[in-house]
Image 1 (cartoon, rainbow, N blue to C red):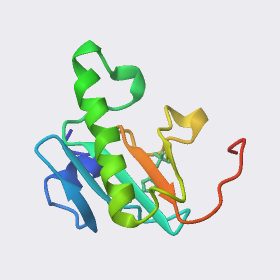
Image 2 (image 1 turned 180 degrees about the vertical axis):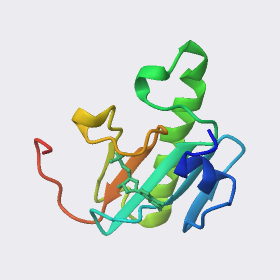
Image 3 (image 1 turned 120 degrees about the vertical axis):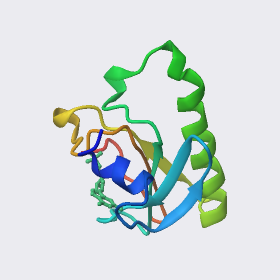
Length: 114
Ligand code: DGP
């Protein structure tokens, strides 16, 4: 998707503070952090929303979570605790239509989320 901002970050066309990359997944710091640690983990391939996943994406989605686990350890929040969130569609707060997992930590988290 040539207009997708996260595709542009994945291609290096827009700068981002990268914290992790592999052949399928990359992770960078959120531009508008909601916690001391706020990192977005995304697939390199464009998938607009969770609604667009199919059976063939099961391994890829597992890889997003494995990357999040690794980054949480690197960021020093694995033991204190962290939250992972994927917003799906506007009603849930999705503003960038390229699947991304928010990894948030470094402060106490309330529940339920807003
Ligand atoms: P969501 O609301 O779930 O779609 O989250 C989108 C997040 O993406 C939001 O927290 C802000 C972040 N974001 C938007 N544009 C950019 C950008 O150009 N660079 C970075 N690093 N983050 C961005």
